Figure (tube, rainbow, N blue to C red):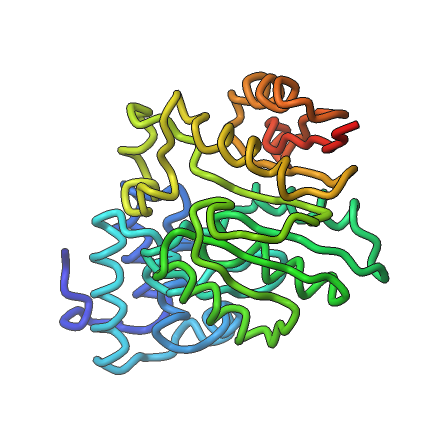
Length: 289
């Protein structure tokens, strides 16, 4: 990779132009990637880059930028390089110990908020919380709710706790647990989860950001359905009558997930589409009667 610190014209415009070319072979958003990384190095917003394209940068910033570019050229996701990712208009801390938040998961928030009145007390559990994007967002958007977040990974729980502290969310607690194993509460109004749902032989695991994300948060047995089936089974013992279950899944798994919930006697089972029009979340009402 060319040493940008030794090239003339180490101003913002020339650095971005060269970086965009270098990233074009590995990213569909090469220019954006370069801008995000340079902003991270400078501690500035993207508007700064446009306002000062001829600004000369010192060698320290250029060297830091070059190091990040090289890691990006090797495929390291932008979120792991900057340590953050936006979700539901909040910027969350992200580390390689957790999944990278994706816009598709905002559908879980939309559906959850539609089910839970803003000025009504309720209990929510987020299973496999990862960075805590779902639990923290729901706790912030529904301050009267009691929210619990679980994960089997202590490292992931630490990231989630830091995000909760950053957003000063006080109605949220964390439990180290494999799904419901360590959960004793049995009166949740809502169970929400983005569980592992990718089959171990799925070729997508060798592509893009998935190559760098924790396998335990991605891969599940039984063609990607094992954890979905397990948490749906267990949720029946922890939901109130007429409580709701929301599960994110792969776009080709909707019929299978619906079948699982129907076999487990959930009612009003239905699948909801994400912003791209793909079936992304399946819901079910628990009515034991």
